Image 1 (cartoon, rainbow, N blue to C red):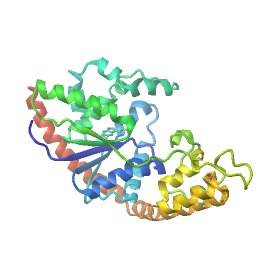
Image 2 (image 1 turned 135 degrees about the horizontal axis):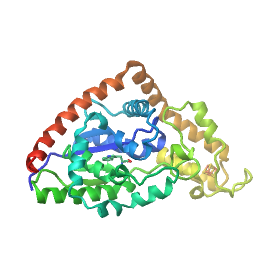
Image 3 (image 1 turned 60 degrees about the horizontal axis):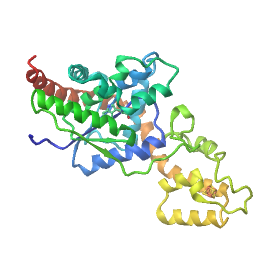
Length: 330
Ligand code: TRP
Ligand code: SF4
């Protein structure tokens, strides 16, 4: 096996403004990787992946992408350190995905757990498409066209990276050893649940957006359910049974956390005050992000960053494709 430069690639589908679940999940992880400086990093908007399920209505895609990338910049991704780009601007991904499709057995794709799960979940649209079946294969092209060695992903994406490894192993065996087998790196960051305890998601309407105003955040947090055993102010509670506490766990320093847990168990603190304390902490996190986002949007920085990143990415992708075409006798 040749040795490969340590490289990270990851992406998100452009679904518009990001929420705190995106932040305390992938984004904190990406920023860590960026700042550690061990890997050369590529982060991109997975435009075509958004189309695999959202092919009927594409009117908002560009706006969503711009908004998402502005949020990335607002939380501290630094275009001087990492490459930020749009998948749709690098058509070589599609070429590579098509070539992988020549030797990838359909059952490998049908076996990926998210294939059946998502089809069962999104019953309102026809997902018996080539595009949706090929989702993980396109993802394999995204990763390998930059010869990424590591892919930061959530638990739900590990099976996709596993499939990528199999496809790339087969490529390397059949044609030439061009590709590293990427490893999935799953972040240790504790994930933030939605206000109702389910996964935080736009579609569940349980999300707090990164740049929402303090006023709006308050309107969402104050009515949220807490430990149902605390009916009266004097009833003691169990932090483990309260979703608000799940938030404290992610955002509070350890000493504050212990104080809150103790206050809850002894009825020393009421849920209203407990929530206000959470709001105070959220505001400390969100205020600078909100300010930076406004600056990014006003200056048109997001567009400049994407344009520059696209050109860097395309250059890399073209170099890989040159080698792939040669290896495959094209
Ligand atoms: N499937 C990923 C998600 O939904 C997005 C994605 C597309 C991706 N291509 C990728 C992530 C390549 C990592 C690497 O979150
Ligand atoms: Fe939840 Fe805080 Fe109320 Fe305890 S005091 S139940 S942690 S909101």
